[in-house]
Image (tube, rainbow, N blue to C red; front, side, top):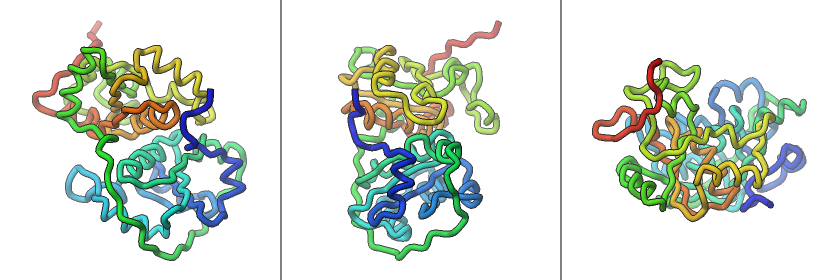
Length: 286
């Protein structure tokens, strides 16, 4: 069983094609200083927070601003954009989802990300990549890829009717409500712990191998269908701020070909702090 779409490239492929005309590498890390310590030759840095988020509102930049960013990065219409990063491509997946949401085509992810590239002893450079600015084509958003809070609230009834699915990709302790923050991130907690009613717990990392690559299509199919998350359902994935759920969104929509998958970017940071939003909590004090 092959992946549904041709959206992954190997480290070997990147090593061979990184200098090809029309191939552009973008590194997107959680650790925003990591790029400066060394990166793949020809790669450019994207800061997911400064480059993708509005500086005032908790919202993304608009398509026109993204168009300008891609132009500053020297990207042209028709370029193949290869994304990679740390954390088994958490943030590369986040960038893939955000760029897809804004209508950017020809996206790929380097399977295994920075982790695999470094583990294989491949070369990194600290040399800056110089580019000629371009005028990137106008972009149009695809709202079918993004879920908003009120849509998620309405979706709970769809889940109860067996027509939809909610995938909580956080850790089991976050899902149960035992903790109100991601492991090792106590400063980023929320007011209430638990999960959205009807959600299934499928931690994002279950989709990856130890080297950071994605598991086979057969393994991924068994993982999600075993939890009742099937291709016939309208699926919404969420985590804390949508970086881990972007990884799962990528698996479901791009690798498995599920036709209806949305990413709830507000995720538990919004839901767990919002007034009037129902939660379920399975953890009880001993």
